[in-house]
Image (cartoon, rainbow, N blue to C red; front, side, top):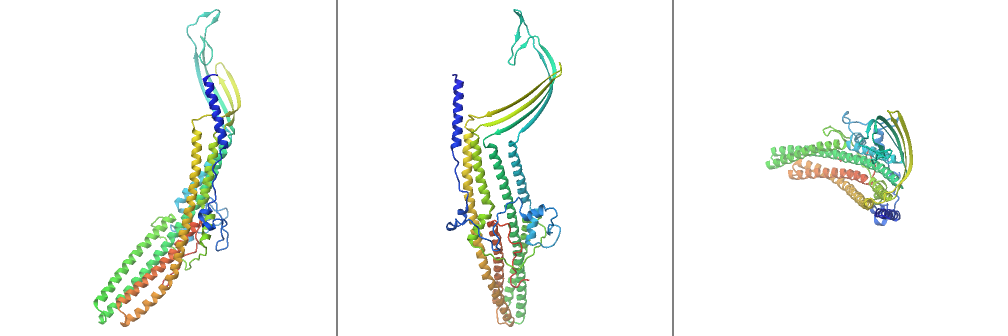
Length: 525
């Protein structure tokens, strides 16, 4: 037995051993349920989400495009799409639902995710291709000139021949001719023990992940538009409060000047009223700037030019929210796309490990070829048809496959850890938004009576001041208290709406109620 035979035998045995170990080694198992990391510990076993306040069960939406966006982007034949006012072409004020619908059409970030779905589907088509046979054809034309010469002598009665590596050629041979060569080849992998199937399943999971990410992107845009919309309403309400504060300061200054002329108060009291008016006007300037900035931010969230004079409308009703924290967490478990993406990522990593293990196994390939050779001088042809079935088995590749297997197992562990981290983050987001919602709701309940009391106190002081029974300082304090109470009520109202939008987003809802707008504070039209 030669040294080369010994090496070949060792490599063959090493390949068989590695393949056996790869087949016997079981992958690490991970619990795909992430509920216990989101729900409270004592309630982690509750996997059925409670029903929403309207009585409808929680549904997991899985679509390439959310329903609202699909109706705008690609309506069905014969379907009538409701008209949506576009600030670029119509000065009509936008409702929240209209603003979200326009954002679905115009926001460029959404197109990035839609193209990601198209790319993932293309990757799925690429992964399907290895299941089909490959057919290739070739054609070549040319010529050759063969001249074999050199000194020769008789050996017995025979002529000496020259022996190159390609064959035996007689000396004195001179050939010159042209040729045409056409060939057709077909190859088909009959079995590769899971390689192709694993890659195709990974591509399928990639499509699902892209669709879920796209769906979540639409939710993100809707949430951003809602928050920006509420900020516009907040800024405009604060502007109205500032305008009212300026009007009251101007009235107080007029009263102070009349009292000074009558000798009731000193000049310094008038100067104090003038300072208060200047401060109110400065607050109005800041409120006007806040309105312009909030409108620009809304345009940015929608995808419009930031300089567009977008108008918004509001409704005097505040939405109620009756879910408990456990209900919110349960809905987040059922609806958050990120949790399903994390689980699909774990599954893809597991399939990657299966592919890495399949690389230790052989492949069975069948191929065939049809070759046609045409010779020009002398005129001749040769046809050749070849078919075969072969077994390909890489016995040793320098530990490349071992390294790929370790990488695949590491990706699985990393995906599992990332999924747990995502679950913790979602649980925190729901808790934070829920606590902020409760605090804002209580703030509304506490600030509304304060506005009514401050209004009545200011009215009474104004009446006393007109008779000279109240000092300007008391009137100024009452006016400042009224302005602060109105601002607190407005801020509590829009804090509640913003917290509600963030909580719905944290739970994975498609959008907040479209007609849930801010209430108008007392004393405002």
